[in-house]
Image (cartoon, helix red, strand yellow):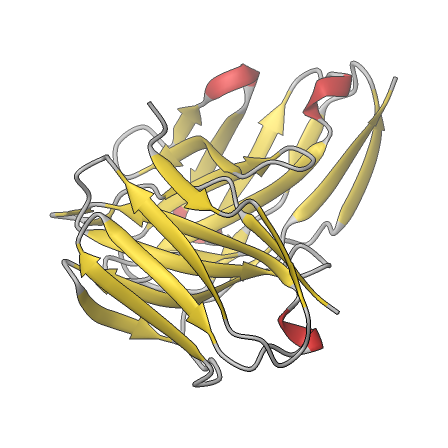
Length: 115
Length: 112
């Protein structure tokens, strides 16, 4: 069973389009994340949701809107796509403990290419 | 603000060489520390973690890391690398809040 799954794995689209990436985790974790990994492999957190509530919202254009219908799902919708949005987007989940957060489990990634 | 520094951006080694990748963090309180590996074209996987106890932590695939609190460091080591260790390695820190901060990664290339 896949712990954290994302769809689609690859997404090629034109500038100006709107697209969504879906993420699901079956680990029972309360917290989910979206990360953007650029061409230099730098991993940057975008959003974090804890039990369907937004807890981290880094400096991300408001064209990016996360949606969490339940704690097992965290989808990412992107409006008016731009060339600079091309990257690999990783979903992750984690479970908070008494001493902070335990390790994150990552999805396989979605490679978004904007042409 | 918390930050994580990985000093080696790109490391090239021959097979059987010993490896040490540096990681320093900037936070004075209690931290949880992680090393992740990303093989080419794949997602991040946990190599090892430190929460408390023995500062020398052993992970998968023969990797280990040592937490030195006085140096704010959590360096990753492996006594003898293999070609299959070619990957990107990320150090990460959680200071008990909602965030896990990742370093910029070290690209390790092992020559066969």
